[in-house]
Length: 168
Image (cartoon, rainbow, N blue to C red):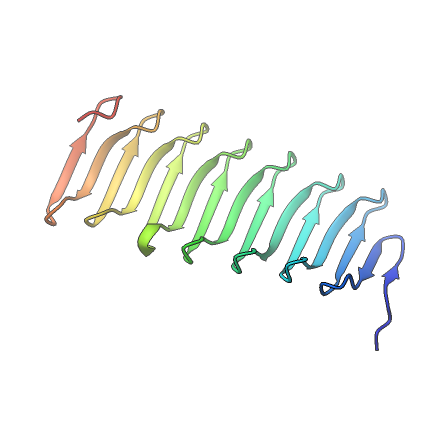
């Protein structure tokens, strides 16, 4: 039986024509939880802190893949766990200002990779599969490659070092 919309001080249950949603509120009237369906028809759960700032988002993207994000007190994303556009799984972490610090997951062409970045968002390390096979690379504070250890063209081992400008 359809009970219709229910609204009380701390909870709202509505059928908005898209599938409905449930919201909860704290004593100050700030929304703390939203559980429902987006206008595109995807389900999601969003939690917020006492000031109403989003802290966790779990849901389905408009592209149809699942993901989880967390945010700090300033509303900046700190973690992304989910599916990349290419379809593989990823875990990304972010510095307090929102710049990416690490990426673990599926890279281009379905290969596994781990990248690290400094506080400025510049790449500092890479471990994964390159064009010819496995590789490990380091980068300086400006994002220029300084060391490459991996498989070269033809399948042989290769060690390459570069100066601060990225020149060999």
